Length: 363
Image 1 (tube, helix red, strand yellow):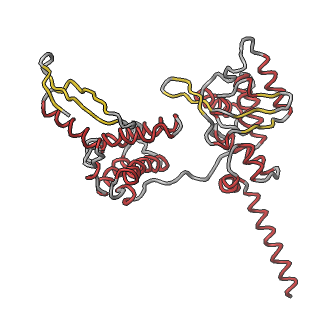
Image 2 (cartoon, rainbow, N blue to C red; image 1 turned 120 degrees about the vertical axis):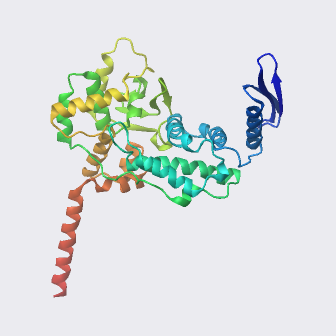
Image 3 (cartoon, rainbow, N blue to C red; image 1 turned 45 degrees about the vertical axis):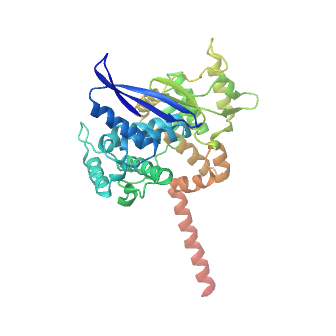
């Protein structure tokens, strides 16, 4: 690298040469430094990055982390990670040298996060605290694994907050029917929630559906994509996991409802979004319908829990349910079996009966 004064603008510039990933030598110029010191500092930082020198700043390492990770995760996943990094991590650690960040610095940062209060005096939730710590730890893990950082100071300190609670809210079929009746005045809401409840699909999967995804002769809907709204743009991505690609058999009444719904559109192509709404719309309608129906308010995602719990109650196996909703069967077993207190009661009753029978035989 070389630092020169630009006589035309009375500022400083750096000629920067580097080798790209294909082994080719490249050259670029960075202009507009007010002082030679600023130009030299930028030059040193670029050299640190080029040689993966861990005396580089945290900000510089984030550029490398972004280049390494961004293209390997789903767009909406990166959007979430980037927001956490930019708003909760980078302001605190950005100007510090990566190798000089110690466990005591992590503790101080954790205390900042724990003591945060929004304009209404509310702190970050325990689940969110755990999420932002996990992201910080992931950055340091990346530096340890690929760039020779000796240890992860965030891992040494340990996490804050707690994992997502396993408690889930769900509607019984009676509660859902009351809700559905309350929103029937808005057709797009009614049919959207019918798909969510009776098929157990995710919000993004619902909002990505097109007429081409339905086979009315077979009564099926194919889940092959997901909708996200990112930075003001409509984005269609792959589903959440490979197992999320699936074909769902719809009940006959739902097949006829969706056929009727599509027939109401005069100008919709096979590949247009059928539910041309967003997640905010669904949340507003959930709030409205719950209030009018007099049923407890649940999240949109809890409709998926409701569908799964209904299938469990009907006696279907974890494997069969997992295929329908795009989960692993072990996840169904772990996350949803506890939804039915009656199951635990039935187990206890049978254990009582079993012991009584054994005691009779012994006596």
